[in-house]
Amino acid sequence: MTRVALILSIIGSIAIIITGNAVLLLLGRALQGLSAAIIMPTTIAMINDYFEGEERQKALSYWSIGSFGGTGLASFFAGAIATFTSWQMIFVMSIIGAIIALFLIKSLPEQHKEKQQNTPFDYVGLVIFVLMIGSISFVITQGNKIGWSNIITIILAATFVISIVIFIAVEKRKAIPFMDLTLFKNRSYVGAVVSNCLLNTGVGVIALINIYAQAGHGLSGFSAGLITLPYLIALLLVVRLGEKSIKKFGAKRAMVFGPICTGFGVLLMSITFIDSTFYIILTLIATIFFGAGTGFFATPALSTAVSTTASEKIGVASGIFKMGSTLGGAFGIAIITSIYTGLSVAGYSVHLAASVSFIVGTCLIGSAIVVSTLVLPNTGREQNTNSSYTTNEEPVK
Image (tube, rainbow, N blue to C red; front, top):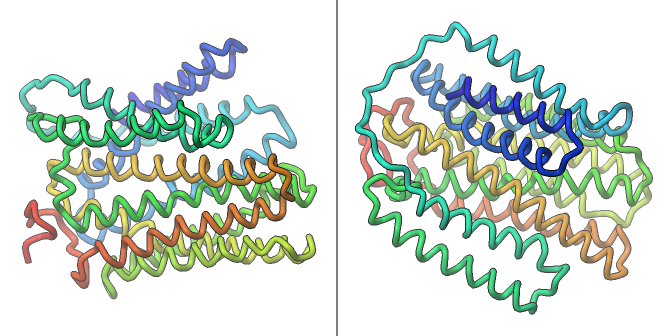
């Protein structure tokens, strides 16, 4: 499945590069989205198959470096591409990366699983879920443009609420549901998924840094991207520290401390009323806190989601976990940039608009602190294996 995902990524990138046709452009992006949706849970499941105990946590740390580090690198990379070459180079590099990945996994042995009886796919659950996510996404991104009291906005908001109720009711009755809701009986897993989703709203902060640095301080796309490099460096340096903290303090402390550090960094960015030179220096410092907090959080969160889930459900569990990351990032970008755009269009200065947007970002990330504190159980040091598992809250001691 990982190979299929990489091939889909290559096909999608080629479709985007070679055409100016809007249909093929959207098709290429859809294929890339499908590729990402497949590759996230399958690679985590591979780590679960090939590694055990402390080696698994180490492997998950490197996976986190690739996942979160890629997000941080994207900001700098996109700025450099936009400044010095054409946008198509983004997808050329994507093709090269996919080919390298195919080469690296070509000799890996397949971990053959016991074949399960063929069961029909839950298309009903999929359609309801897409309707649910699509409706709330439209409300968040377009509500300010068409009006919050507009009948369309109200209908879509109601659709979102109704879809949630119907989705839960339908999925509970399915033998093989689109989303395995029994996973959410595990408090550790719920805490990891929700806090991870909320922390990933910080992707919207990264997007806003680039927008505001160019609009408010006259920087080029490349220079704006450079401001986020400390975020990437700090994240890469601290990820392994987060992994080691699991053994000493347990995952919960790391999952509380990480968002505190990240939120503090975003709060520093909201001080937009100072001189341009001082603000850029402050932002460089802020991105260090932002990256360090994210890096410290990454492995404990992923390890908690994986280590407290039955081994046969790792693929589904990791898929939901990474779907939470993706949705968090998408909603973070939509909410934070929409607030910035709405205030700017309303006649407020870009500095005030950015300050308010960063404060909102701080509140979103702060919600991850609350979830980690209240939802995650106090279990001390995390278990290193999946072998002892119950459907309640934590592995059997």
